[in-house]
Length: 390
Image 1 (cartoon, rainbow, N blue to C red):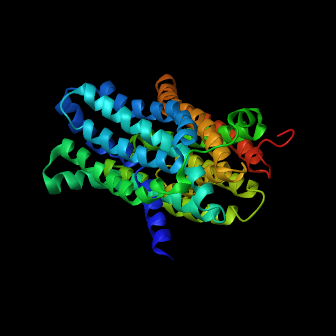
Image 2: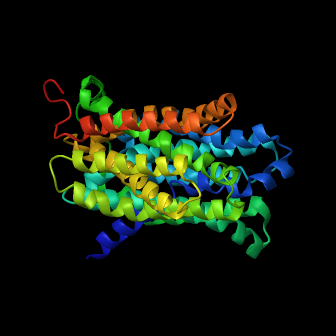
């Protein structure tokens, strides 16, 4: 491997690792943040809500930036804005806390949408492998941030503000590694016709969007509510936290391996359906026997959800013919998808409040998973985005 290729690979992986810590690093410090800033529980929860909403709303900016400055320079700008955002929210006062969070999430939204196009542009013959690398790095970044912020706070003595500022360091390092790509003559604006018209008229777009949104919804429900469900069924808090960590770690392995296999075939239907079925089985375990071999349900759930996320992004990269169309498809699928996902934990909690238990909301999620299976079967079929009737 040449030095240029090594720098490209290192920059790509480190960029992907920066796409979740700004979000995942909030929850472990939330009680301390609320006490220090003077926020109510609703105000503390609004930090994450603001970020998830930004993921859905601002992803559509990515194709516009790519046309003007190119995908590589869009990623570089995103990394610098993440660094500014996480540093800003460590300053004094609730307004800058929310502003910094929104700024970081806006950059992440743009980068989320851009990354499948970057895969298509830089690794056209290895889309399956590099999609797996990308998604596993995203998941690993989230897991590392949620696990490391509290020990890092204790080790450094900086408090939550200092630890928040430290999250800017890996973003700046990734920007430094990505700088050669951004300065390359081949990294200019994306020319050609505007792809949004073709993308919006294609059935493939809406199949992929449904898959992205529904699998994200079921993932965020797990992230928000799984420990609470397990604790109310009798498990201690520390064990509930370990089980959530276990399912997240399993997702890293699943998201790395599955795209490599699925990308070798014209149809991804068997893999998407299989991932959906595993997710159903994991949720059934949580519904029917949450304290009986709970680690097994977490492994099954982790494989299903990790594979589903990776396959949705793989399909986004495979279906269009060029990086500009990939970016446009990614913008539609991820923007709409994250808006759908943001509603999941809220509605799940509302159903819990109305029904007085977890059975009704979990049964509703199983219905959502049936819809995800249908969307996955439709999105996974061989197709070229924009072809007649598609």
